[in-house]
View 1: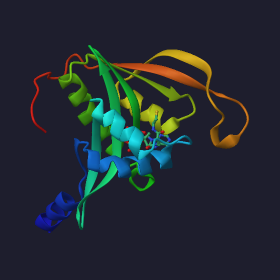
View 2 (view 1 turned 60 degrees about the vertical axis):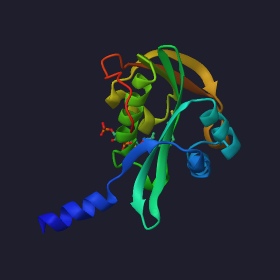
View 3 (view 1 turned 90 degrees about the vertical axis):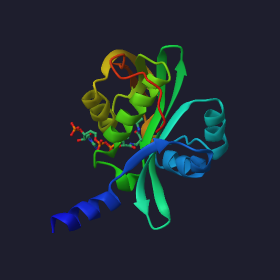
Length: 175
Ligand SMILES: CC(C)(COP(=O)(O)OP(=O)(O)OC[C@H]1O[C@@H](n2cnc3c(N)ncnc32)[C@H](O)[C@@H]1OP(=O)(O)O)[C@@H](O)C(=O)NCCC(=O)NCCS
């Protein structure tokens, strides 16, 4: 019984890896399900080509693996900006966002960053919980920064947040 469970979870457990150009279609589809203004495949491929740090979360699937989430950041010197993190709706609320964010932070450190900055809508409860649990601290607020959600009235505030990652291992290694 114990062996059956460990085999089952080894087959279904998500894992993270560096994003590839061949993931761009799937990344665009996941982005479109998370945000009103989507990023298309070409835009994502441009970011990958520019050397942005991009990672995906995957689940084992019949044809190898299925991409269920991704994170992309831009690194300039010792600062990283988390541009987006998004999961397929079917994969949310299982802790995969946290796993992906931890993996991504390690990669950002190895790319030279010691701090990660981001902006998040003040009413995005899931994202705020994810970031706070990961150790991000609020450093500012931009009033009315985002357009209204779902075409409603009233612009939404953005919170700016920062995470210190200087303590992570900076040694480059293959993933
Ligand atoms: C934000 C997002 C990436 C979080 O990923 P996730 O895998 O669902 O998050 P996790 O399961 O790791 O949960 C992280 C924390 O958020 C909490 N959480 C998850 N969904 C929540 C919700 N709807 N409301 C409040 N808290 C929520 C979890 O309880 C957990 O907190 P805990 O560690 O204190 O228990 C995911 O919801 C998503 O893709 N949203 C759409 C895109 C988006 O808004 N991205 C952020 C842009 S700034």
